[in-house]
Image (cartoon, rainbow, N blue to C red; front, side, top):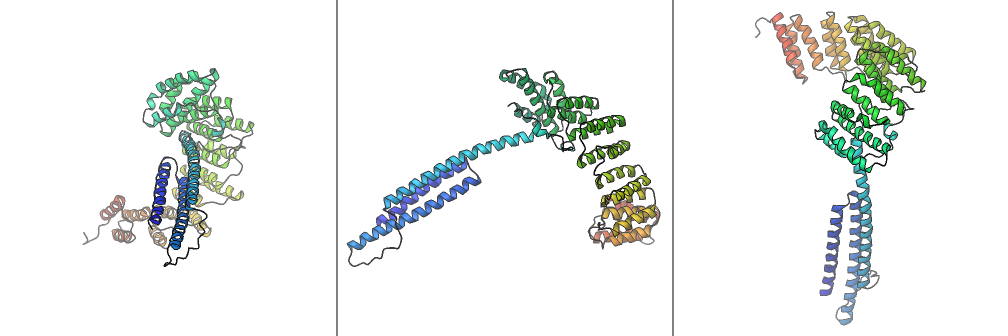
Length: 494
């Protein structure tokens, strides 16, 4: 009996020891995969322990049966598989082998984890992705694949300094890193490449922190040590000088970029931004002709971003050039037409907006909800409610869903020509439209119209309706009601 109790104790101690050692290994090396291996090891030990305990119990009870004539003991129907010492030795051997495999897997996963950490660190230093980082031409190489050289080890310290708010110290930090690179360089080309990578990492870190002036200062400090540079460097520098509003440097950066490789699509978009700010139509035409000579084209995403840049700066003639040039005119989509239409809408050119709508129909491009919204806005701006009503009905008959913006734009047009009751009727109909429930702007539009005409009682009713619909009035709404009280006060009502 004592022996039978001693054997499980021995195995429990062995399991506790193995569990402690594997826990330490797990804390040091592994995550999910290590936990799976740990679980498998423990399950194996548990089965081995149960098997060994069954064999030991069978042997002990067999001895007791031989020594006693008064007790009849039936041996359990469990295959012992050998003596207890053999089972114990086999279990321990299997556990040690499993732990050896576990340690090897831990080392492999730890090395793989360190590689992933370095990859994440490099990815954080990559060029940010506003409109500039999307490939705009299928023929343009990816900026990440264009550079095959390894970065110097000092780039991490430069990025860390910029993130810590020490971007002003970049010239001194680059000088120190450059001195260390001189000891490792095997020639002048290696040294120039190292300097280019140091500056590239600094510019990317500055761009991520919106420290473009500091990044440009770092470039001026090391420009004589760069040599011809690389494609990523001049691409990043083009973006930096544009964001730093140093527009005079953009053409030089673009020429250096063309000298070392084929400009990517986002480089062309940055140059379109430069020409739009300068309102330089001939310059944009020269660049587009150069792109055409290189057998490159703008893909739809790039073209739409370039159009948006032109419209945002009011360079509508540059946007028209992009729409009709051979490098951009293929596969014109709804976004391109709507973007150009938005530019003409801001200028109040209703006729040109409807001409673009007719051109969309000729090209079999279906208008979107945004397109109809722009047309409604320009009709309201020009106080052409017949055209606005036609657009509104056309959108209702289409498969598109009206939203609060469309209805509010139409209500503003009705108010502008004095049809306040029609605007109020539109407001009441919005409650029954799914996805077009009136918002604060919708209510305020009618409140103002009531206030200008002294219809205070309707204003108060509308405020109560807002509160009932859980739309909280703001200061503008309450001021509209006060103006209405001044224009037409209610008799006997405070």
